[in-house]
Each structure stands twice: as C-alpha cells, then as structure tokens.
Length: 333
Image 1 (tube, rainbow, N blue to C red):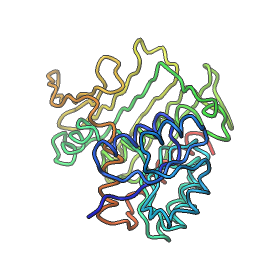
Image 2 (image 1 turned 90 degrees about the vertical axis):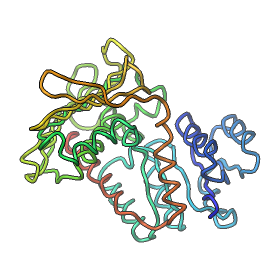
Image 3 (image 1 turned 90 degrees about the horizontal axis):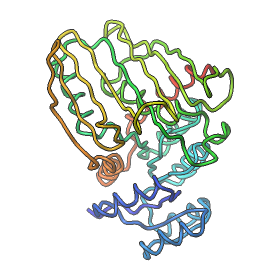
Image 4 (image 1 turned 135 degrees about the horizontal axis):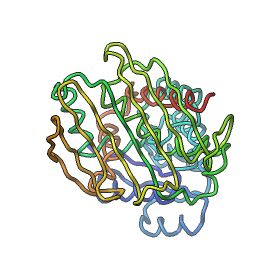
C-alpha cells in the first residue's frame, strides 16, 4: 500500500509543521505545494524538489488528477477553509483542514455535506485529542474510574496574541480567542465525554476588558455548556484568552470532576508543549502521565493513516459542526 500523495495549501508556521511531521514519518508523498508568499514557497519547495509548486489553490486543483493527488492539507486563514475544502471535495480529494473547520455552523454543515456527497474523508486539526494525557483521561472516564463525570473545567490562557494581521479581521477570522483557542476546548469536552448531546451554551466575550456584542474579535471569552440528561445534567465551563496576565507563557487545563474521583490534564510550567495528567482522590493525587513534543503531528498522521486505509467519508467529522454551533451560541449569532 503506497502512502497517500498530498498537496499542501498554506505553508505558514502551522502548515509547514504539519508537512514536516508527515515527511519525517514517511507517511505521505509531498506531491504539490501552494503558497501565496514566493519566498515561503521557494524555501519549502527547495526542501521538497519533487513537489509541483503553485501560487493559487485553483491552479493546484486543476492539476490534481494529473498529479494523482489523494488529498490536500489546508492551512490558510479561517475564511478560506470552507471554499477551499468544498472545492477539493468536489474534485474527489480528501481534506485535512486546520482548525477552526469553518467561520460558523452553517459553513461547517456545508463542508460536512460536501464530504458526505463526495464520500471523501474530511478531518480537522484538533491536535490536543492526540496528547497522551488527554487520551488517558478519556480512557479513565470511559472505564468509570471517576464515576459519573458531572463537571469539566477547561482553560486556555495565552500570554501572547496572534502575529498575523488577518487574525484581527472578523471577516477573515470569524472571531478571536474563542475561535482560535476555544474550539480546542469545546472539542475536548465533547470528545472526552463520548459525544453527549448539547442542550445549550451561553457565555460572554470581551475585547480589552469591554464586553462585545455583535461582530468583533475577542481577546477573552468565558462560556458554560449544558450537556445532555444522560450525563445527569453535566456542565462544561471554559475560559480562553489572548495576551492574558497569566504569569507564564500559557495556562492549559482540563479538570474533570466525577462522583468517584477527579483528574486534571494540564501544561507544565507554562509550556505550550509539555503536559501531564494527574489523578485525584479527595486530598490525594498523583501524576500518571507526562509527555513533551511528540504529540504535535499526531492528528495529521492519524488522518493520513485513515486515508491510506480508506478515503471514504467518516461521520466522526460531524462533531466539528457541534463545536461550531457552540461557538455561534457564545457569540450570540
């Protein structure tokens, strides 16, 4: 079974990192590169001389059949995710898209519908699912080790803000810290609890301490998500921010409280890359998992593995529509 032949659209920091993860693992053939910045395209192209180079995604798609592409990886500004993904799916290509999947739930539904119609695999880069700590937490919840989990507390405070101008344009970004960081936490909450129904969500978003209403780019958001009755009325609360007064580079935390115990997945010493999982019983606790950077490329490696096995539609992507629905509810749209 040959590795999938992939095209890469968007070669910024995150796009280049995902490409490097695949190339280092030998999990895919880098067959095409697309980037609007000539210097960036030249640099990546020189590292992968076998790949065809394009300045426009449409040009790449026009030659997809000739290049025998199996799929494309999209790492472009948020507003381009939906049109580029749908265009690729309509040409019979599988897609791995950067988060957030879409600007809103309507776009997300159209993308998933396009994948279902084309019967092609669509994935999104929710990378924290693939950390050892998060996966072990999910296993313990499913095994009943914490009893019935009735509360999740999720936090992602980043002492930095994004450095790309488009991130501050609501037409291109679709939102701010909630869209950038909150989607990871919402996805984790649903994934950890094995896709409970969402009965409602509410919250507030702020920009420089002022509450926003209507369109805008938030730098702080908090929300509460009311989960289905089969979980006894569980609630997931979250808080996210850019440029936080966090006392460290970032704070990432997912705390689960159950009737028989608790656990906390958290970053270590403000690191973006080092994590641990602690298990609690009353006042006692122990760290059960520690890890570092090895998890960074696992999401795209998992998608590529699934693509090599079958390029057909996977309904698992429908969770991403629900993530967008929660974001829409918190933004009040």
